Image (cartoon, rainbow, N blue to C red; front, side, top):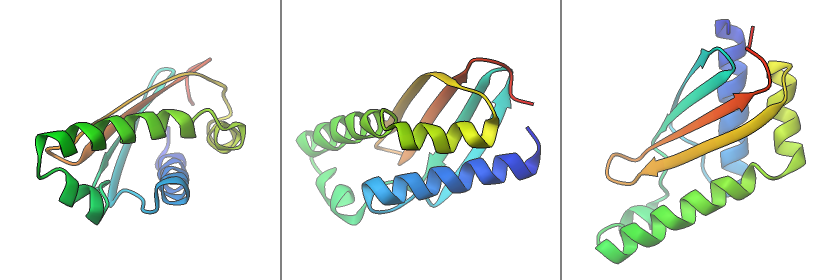
Length: 116
């Protein structure tokens, strides 16, 4: 994946997250490995979420809500179309998680063919 495609991919991810969550990640690093696109996003949490994670229950709630929300985002056909238009390949699976302590989210996009 060339730097221009990586940049476009990062910009679309930031736009999607901002539209659905209210703010986008402060930093995104994306890498291509065969048919996988791996995106590491830092600075995801909102001010309210940062306040909530002051307790164990708040950490659980924020983690669960973030994970479920992101999985729901990627079920939207318009979101998938935007991502697939950049790569020229179809998404076959998406894996995502967030580490609340470090405010780092990882998403792995699995495509039907290697990304060129």
